[in-house]
Length: 506
Image (cartoon, rainbow, N blue to C red; front, side):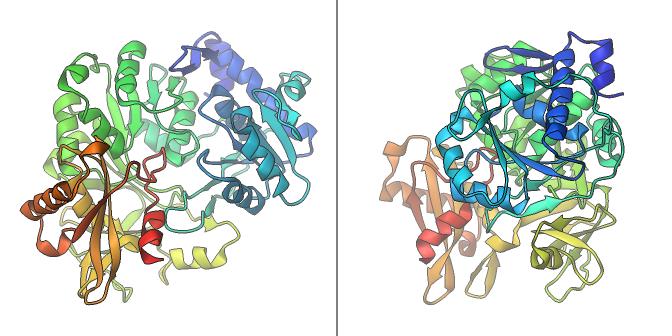
């Protein structure tokens, strides 16, 4: 099966719906546009293995470009719309994109990016005109809506969000297979989460992130319908589930927190009973948050642990999770190993670096040092996270190793403290990290975003520290609390903790 066959069998079925407007892209339209994009790429000299990059908001054209590149055997790099021109141009140059497509929404930034590009890069605008860019729609109109002669399966080439350093491109080798051939990983995910032609998938996150992008493409590959939200809003997300009778969705824990903090009457006003599979990942979910979501939505929450690197995949369903609360599951593919700083494998319930073996090999593009440090002498690879495996083989995440605080010689993992603070009713978001301390080396600092910023005070800071001490040992509790109107968090839910730390370590 695949997009081309679905376009023949169900040409008028919605492939993509824009949640805010209800605008529909049918399977026939998506198929035609994908062929035109593939023709456009070939017409401009892009053969199999070449690359493109784009800065586009959540819009059907985003997925049309991906499907077209996926038919032309290209690497396609979606760039975060939150990145500034220097960051975006670094990625475009690093991945050697031959074509750069920019939405008119980001016209000013796109012009600045264009001036920083190396080599001969064709710059195209979408949704309107940008000085120095050729209008994509005009070029596309001249392209035949038919299959190119040398179709091949393309691959995303995505970059990390740079939360702990400069973004890294994750390059996975092309297979040379036809576009309709799904990878073993994609087939496993479709089976695990029961994707079918009846699936209606709600996509509340930015499409440039790995999980939303891949789940949207899997939905289309299975013949379902994807409903893309232009921007996440907690109440509107509930409205979309009811309005479009959504069966599947994918979230990050911060979205759960924001929905749970809606007024109870607001939450009760929407019917979410159609939801069969609500997937979440990206960051560890506080156990009380997940418990409340299961109480509200029922046993439909499915969690996974994986990265853009594709080196392993752990998953857990709601029934298993209720028996192993806090776990991200057992390996669906790849084997998990917990390793100490000496490189020795640890036993059950011992905390160390998480490594995978038996998964997909990957490399960080143009960065042999980063690739080398991701692998150990046994050939196992890591995403840089810390955790432990219990006696039944279930993996539990502690935090990212880069975020660990060493205070008075004791290792403190901020995630545990953040999980406590986020449950305080006045807290909308929180970041915990280490700051310099003359005696201890580092002390624990919390920066809090309040639901009502006018409540910020020294008394509230003291209350939050006391709240932590009711639930955690003193070494894990913040010595001080600062308030910030908005934490620097990606729309995908990832926190730019590096930016916060730099302020205090400068």
